[in-house]
Amino acid sequence: MILEYMEDNSELNIELDLSDKFLDLTTDNIDIAIRVGEVPDSDDIIAKYLASYEFVACASPKYLKEFGTPSTPYYLFNHQCISFNKNILIQWQGNDFVNKMNRSRMVSFSIDAIRMNALSGMGVIIHSKIFVDDDIKKGTLLTILKDYPLPKRKVSAIYHKSKRNDDKIKNLLNFIQGKISKTLPL
Image 1 (tube, rainbow, N blue to C red):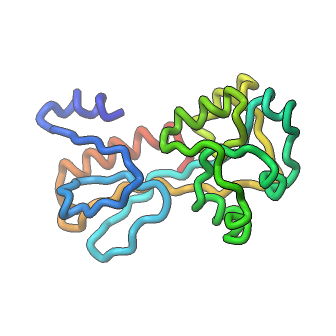
Image 2 (cartoon, helix red, strand yellow):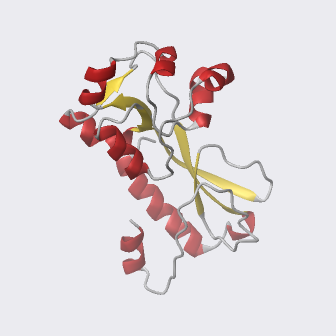
């Protein structure tokens, strides 16, 4: 997506930082940040909602055959879990649930590493559905706990209010909105 935009706007330079850390738009000289989850509460920040995406709990057929399929979220206490996002778990089942959860068997900030470990039979993951949808369709990952829907996460573009009239910002936001709306539900 970014490459396509850069090809059409050759005068722009883009610095892409893929991280979970909260950044200060002004201090870090950031024009636009894409934020997944809650947007910081600030009078200086404008947030443009882009889309939302679903999470899904899943595991490989190999893992489920060996360890069984959990029938409720509380059965996860007895399973090997891979890199569960604490905030998602809190939204889903509450603080008590998270406090009783065993530490994840494998922790990674790489969505690919988490997915690959689940595919290899290492354990249960709660992952963004968009990143495992093909695996679910192929049957290499199986959805579990369907009766316990996971929360959706918002995807927003945030920028400093001083840039609200900047045409470059408006153009990039419109481009991102158009691309994301084809991939994620609005």
